Image 1 (cartoon, rainbow, N blue to C red):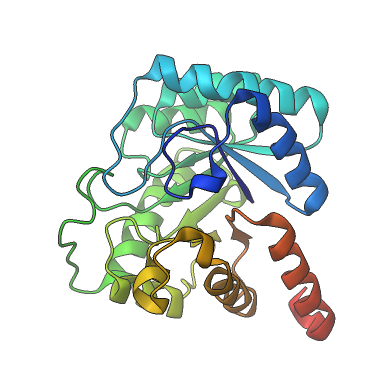
Image 2: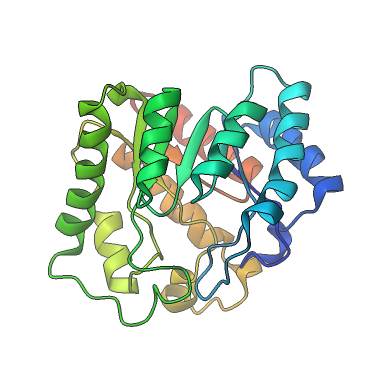
Length: 258
C-alpha cells in the first residue's frame, strides 16, 4: 500500500504532495508494484492539528476521482477519521476506508456497514495531538488486539463480510518504542487480515538514532522483511519500489512465503 499524503505537514517531508503532483505519484505507485494507493488529506503525526472537513475533502476528492478515472481497476483507500469524508471518497471511487481512530465515531461503523466496503481498523490511544504523552498499557499486545477484534466483531455481527476487514495495531500511535517492538514481535493470530504501517516512523530515531526521516529506509525495509516472514498481509509504505524489490527477492528465495 503506497502512502499518498495530499498534505503540507506530514511527518516525512518527501511524502507531501499537492493536487498537481498527487495523481502522477499515485499512478506511479501502482506501476511500481503497489496493490493499494492510500489517499489522505489530514496529517495524523504526533502533535498534528486537525483540519476541517471542507479542507480535507478539497484535498482528497479530486485526487481520488482522477486516480479512478485513470485506473478503473486500481485499489484505492481513503485515510480519514470522518464518516462524511469516507462517504464522499467512496462515491468518488475509493474501495476501502482506512480509519486511524479505529471506528471511534459510530457514524463511521454505520457507514461501512451500509456501504459494504472494505475497512482497515487502526488502534490509536488518544488523539494525534496527545497520543504520545506517556502512553501506558498493562499488556500492549493483548489490549490493542482486544480493542481491534471487538470493533471488527461488531461489524461482522451487523452483516459485514469478515474478509473485508483488516486490523492495524497502530505502530507509533500512542505507543512507546517498547510497545511498538512488542507489537511487531507478536503478530495477532486473529482471523482478520493484518496491516502494518511503520514506514520511516520515529521508532527508527530511537532504535537506530536516525533523526532525519530520509535516513530511515533501511530500518523500514528490515521491518518489511520481518513482516513477510510473519505473514502480515499489507504493508503501508512511502517507498513502493524499494519494498516491491525486497518482497520479490524474498519470495524468490523463500517461495513458500509468496
